[in-house]
Amino acid sequence: MSDQQHNAAHEEEEEFNVYDMLPPAGTIIGEATEEEMEAAAALEVRHVAFMRLQDMYIQFDGSSYKDLLKDFQEFELDSTKFWRTIARRLQIPYEWPIRIDHANGPIYIGETEDSREVEESAE
Image (cartoon, rainbow, N blue to C red; front, top):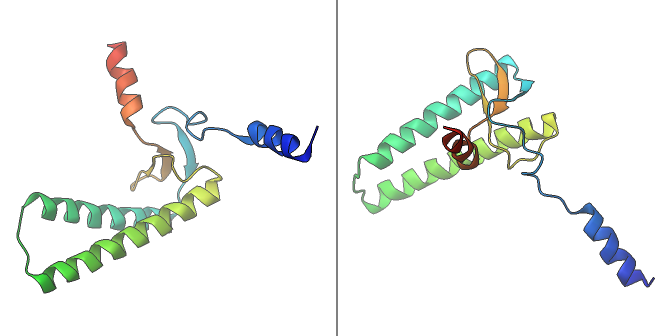
């Protein structure tokens, strides 16, 4: 077997789909610290505020738009950094839809379109 064939065979063995290992929605996969619960709650508040602002269909002038864009980018950066840290600590793929119960602390798998389709087909 040539080196090229060996490398190709080795790459095939290592390929996997992170979604194939995804536990069902609602599965508890860890526990958040107090600091993580507070940070998750603060990010959720910012997210909801931005969503409500988007739903208002307000028109902005150029400078307001730039300020708002900066706020959105800062939120996305903070959110990504937070969830990457959680995923790294739990040793799970970043792409998994995880949520944190802000009041009690369990970290669990959130709902996805696929999990909702499974529920609907079961009815």
